Image 1 (cartoon, rainbow, N blue to C red):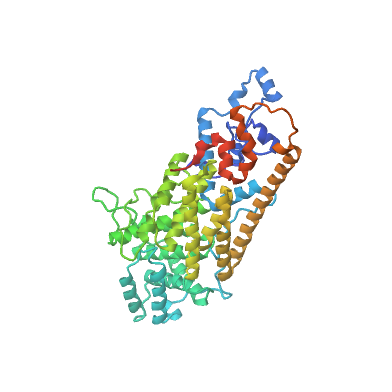
Image 2 (cartoon, rainbow, N blue to C red):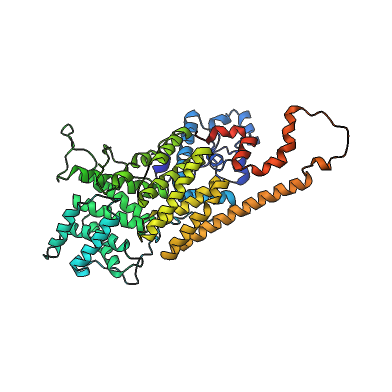
Length: 550
């Protein structure tokens, strides 16, 4: 990634020559042309030589030597583009910029609104403790929770051999031997079984999560095995659905390093001198563990604008399709997600092609549809950060998918399966619809808000209530902005009203040029125009950044 994003802080940097906008607003300026601040906030960027520069020139000092050369300007532009991509990848940063555009004074702070339905609140009053799983659950309890896991989680993240787990359950309750990693795997499965079957948290669920954490962190310096990697994946899946962003991101980064240390990230080859994995593991399970780990790390990183873990020589072989399993369907999105890395430079046409490819895909289950919708929203944010707008067929396709995403979120809510996208996707849909600002997008806001309200009614947490309130605040800010624009236009029309033929004094008819006759009927036709039509009439040059497909 660019060094400006990964290097340690080096203190505040300020260019010796600030642009006029930054000087007027008293903002930091990097001296580039245009500067990063002006690019980010879409200001006009211009420089004016001050008297001090003139004096330096008269004394034989070239003021141009203080400005950035071609190489540094190129690096600055690249850093600016990378920052813009980083912010657009993050739904939280996109929300913040959208709110600042609408009302800088009342814009909500940047936060992980609706990142999941709990954000760390899924706890009981009792402090969780690490215990043996046999002290927490009976064999029948474990079988029931495992059945929930394999019904709701495994079809989307299928990286566990069910027959092996069922065998492990029988062995564990028949003996007193506590295999650390096998125990952590069973605790992870049971914890997710609780999460996906119980609306309210239980003491047992908290203790299961704590027991898995204790065993994993206790063995973190040991050579990782397939069992320990499996337990780490289960932990990250749970944290992504129930805990804070920072905790989930840290765990996902540890997981990626564990995968690499175990050698599960690359295809075994006798042509390489690098050591092969010490443990034999089924190639399909290995690829699934890697794919799910990458998927979780990429999106926990993107969502809050943080770095992801890149593994050298990682396999590009995707999981194979299996009957009743949709892991391959979700993981087929992985190459598109990886291409959105802020370190990679893409122009609008490349992002448009990726968007069209995602829109054409057919996903068959609600969690898989939400993953497709989440990636689409990210691509829309990236394109909108380039001042692109959507019209015609592509706009219809985007809105069709967001409508499908809202229905999918409602479906998993009805199933009491609180996947992390259950609240996140409807919330991000609200943000993107407001940014699109078309008649069609505004009309879909009601469905998104109703879904978000339903989530908050069932999972009544501070996170869902705050997400609902923030979404309402965004709509209010958008309404006020529209009302101000309408008031300004109304004032103009009072000063310069439209004059009809009936109000025109009788006088000799004048010969009108043919190319001016359209003006007489403009007032009649204007009511049928939408925002897109106005853009086509008033700003035809913007069509070069408008995506429309036949």
